[in-house]
Length: 377
Image (cartoon, rainbow, N blue to C red; front, top):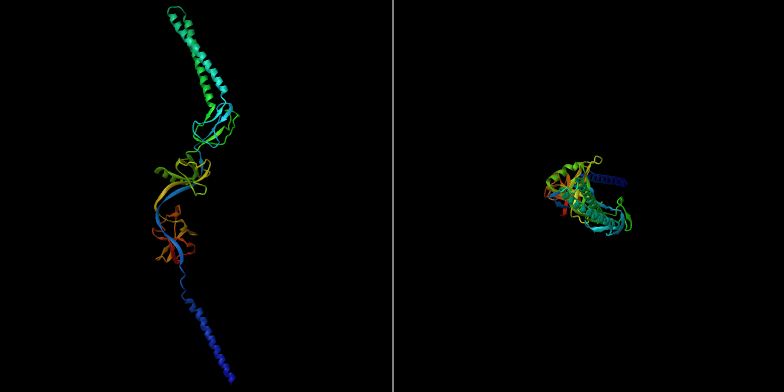
């Protein structure tokens, strides 16, 4: 009897335990689903206000610095190069003596030519006086007309001889002047190509030195033909500014102006060459140096701008996070970005408005509607 009673009690306890276990399981499976989860913590972000600003529109291209003039100095007479009066890399002025050629032989020829000129001038002077006498004598019948005509022809012949002598003298004077070689331009002399003591000729192609006019410097670069309209419109408004940056686009080397457009498009590349001039570049631009040219084609006046670092890139295009709902959440907005200047980019489609707060830091952890806490402006 006692044993049967204990069995019944154990059975009841087992059933109660199963009921309690079932209730607990139902609570966690059913009621646990409807339990309200706590909201996620707000993400700390930095934000700035959208501003209005003038933004320049640039056309960027890789350019090459070209000198205004490059002159290869070649001797205009044959002779021994006696002296070189410049240092390699020296700045020279127009008319400055840079080399001399042995001129002794030419001076001797010049002396002979001058002597011949004096001799023929004396003969001409005597013939002119004789012609005057014959003209007086023929009036009284003391000479013949043939003698007078012969003397007149002799005077003309001697006049021609004197003129020829004068030409020879002038030619030799020019040849002697060529022995003193001067710089034809202001510029910088390159490396010396011929040493003193060498025999130089007028047929040499290497020359004695190369002089490059450094200022004003010019930069030639190619732009796509699609930009021709914008460039022509900019030229119609006035001077078009061109900036020259170094290879890394970090340092501004010089500021100049658009000088000219080429007269045709290169059909193989679809580009047209542009030349800009830099009057005050100093030594910042060096011939054949590669630079990054930026041609200012237009200026967007008072357009909305946001920091470039605030712009995110996705599969549907560029977007930004705008702080809304009294600073508690963010809204994802797709935007159309325009030209950039400094560290800000223009927004072309009115995707944001002046004064709105744009997330600049911490955007990588956000989604549309995420809770945020602005910790830095």
